[in-house]
Length: 424
Image (cartoon, rainbow, N blue to C red; front, top):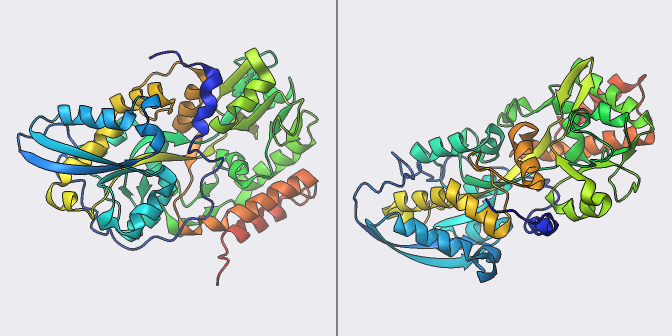
């Protein structure tokens, strides 16, 4: 892998929002004709000798089709065609940012791309519209083999996988290496003994990491059980609230980040704030996955919300109807190891593939976070019930209205609110 100049990393903000979509639409029933990834091998690079002549429409962001970025999409499609001499393939390209896939595919899936790039939180809507295929066979096996469990869960909905992930979206920690050692950054409590640490406790996208660390769950163990709802109750959750009461009282803790606390020597954010971190810490900039916290004498790993961007297959097109194996194989190729390597080298798109070795701290921190310091942000319609109660808890903690005396009461009230639908 080539060395990437860290000062260029702010370009990773392209298409990566500071948070995933906060309200997920309800999903429609069934598979909507998604199939099983062309059945059988589902995306193997072995064409089996079957002759196919086809035109494939592929949609991706403009940046992936730019000569300045090495024409990544066109280059990978041509490499795919070369790997399949038994298939005579013609490619048509369209510009569609990942965040717009739901709107552009959902309007009329039959007129949409055969293969396209999308943000994972759109899966329920794409499925409801009949515009995304379930993947199976060898394609599914490769997705599971080449990605962390969290990454696979980002493209899993109601037990099925609906995309080939190629980059993650989560948060991690930026810190000053002149203040914190490699050993210090493993523990938030150790860091608080060395210097000021800022954390956006009143932001619901972040506060969950403390509760999840101690066993609280959102829709079950992996976010896929809608009936399980939120479990931020009982002793495990109260212990976290009490921990946070003490955290707020610590003089070395500040709510926010280095922008709102200029003396903070560590803060938590994602790739979009790389430049802010570089400006603050310069040559002493360190980047790492979130640390552990100590609750009841035990180390517990903080876990951020995570999402991904992925390659999807449209089951509503003529190509899928006649040659689904071609569309699925292309999606698997575009999200495969070699294509992800090229994506990283040409556009600094941080890979999810665990077989790829990266050579800079920013990429490594995101990959580590996706591997062991995050959980998938659930793709459930009732996820919308989480945000306001969690934010309210954070704001009350910061304001000092949550205390050890009322921690149990406040925690139970938060859990009840999360599990109460806004519309009865």
